[in-house]
Length: 132
Length: 433
Ligand SMILES: [Zn+2]
View 1 (cartoon, rainbow over the protein chains, first blue to last red):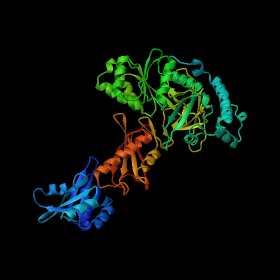
View 2 (view 1 turned 30 degrees about the vertical axis):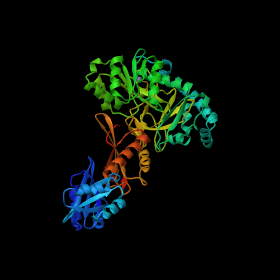
View 3 (view 1 turned 120 degrees about the vertical axis):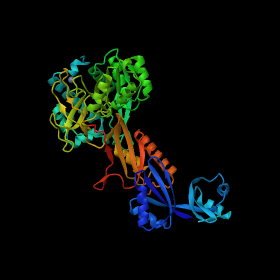
View 4 (view 1 turned 120 degrees about the horizontal axis):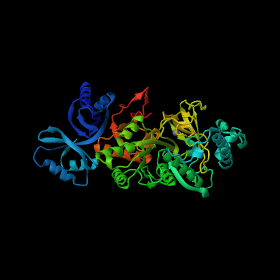
């Protein structure tokens, strides 16, 4: 399992910029991210090259930043591969969220959080996918 | 203008004092013999009932506070046997636990009498159609006004609170001449009347408003907006309910029904009685109450008192508009709220109480109630659906604890005001006092 950096952000101007700036100062590279928003706040999910250091840098900057377990799954970069992956997981498992990660030719990376992480990880591995 | 009970309301000052002397003597004797809580307090102060001969001796007697009612919940302070109690009411407490008050048949009669006096003061009489838009139930507002208006001989419309559309329909169809409700609800009703252009269809003449503090500006706005006269009724369940005091058509302070409720003003810090005209905490003694009589109950309401005769002819003491509270209680949409209740409710959700802030404002004359909660490590989730569930849970827990539905706003840690390192729990922008 991989570590995602999750940051609670109020909908105030400049907050995203401050996150980016703090990570830059700490020498941290953002590999991928996703922002879920509501009318009052947003949840910024970041994949970075050093999540622990990133969390510490953001916390020191006054942000509510925490580490979350996620799966990085590599699926073939071709039509239909996402559907095949989801078929594999079936309907009993709930996907909390997912977003694209970096590409590793010939595969595309996906960040996923699901309701039963150990089960999903095992099942995906057993089917021959690469999981981080 | 008519006066409901000239012999009591316009009593010469000396007669009033004599009545108060006699009633206080009887009260102390009754408490001494029937309520162990008061007997022990009087014994500790070395007072026997015979020592209290006149109303001037009242300053020797102990105070009663809300916590005394809570500590003796539910029946510990009752002075009448349960066979004589005909009604129970309750008010919310700071820890979620209510305080309970009981009324004998005689107490209900006195209450009806006091409310009839108030309604008469407002120019309401036989044949008037009184729409009681206070909540009915454990809260004293609805039933208090209801029985008083019936006693007076008015046509009572017991519609209770809420459902504004229905309120307006009845107001028009039945020809309501007087409405009793909280001032903020009346402001809301007024907006609806204007939106629906019902002004010309109304026979409304007066409104009896109470249950929450309100500004002179709001009063003026409603009076001008609806062309009616507003009266400010005061009461609290611990003492009786609405009808403890109300202003007459002179609007120079509220007449206290002081043949039944003796009023003093004290310095909340030194507890010394203050002279007329000085602002302090209102303290009330229930001279005639049988169910749950209280000695020198500290209301926490700040006001001043005058004993000068009023131009209306009444001779009772008058208290001025309230100047605030001597504790941290907020009155939101007529509901009493203590910050400690909110803290307790939040503790049900998180192991350690998160930082929070209560924001109260008045938008278009309606109280807004928002609570901002900092998302600390205990409450954090990377899933928006979990955070949304958290907001809903906070709102529901508070609704259960205090009966009000707050808007919940989740905020980043360390963003709420902390003055001198101490969290600022309440921001009340209403400027009510
Ligand atoms: Zn008067």
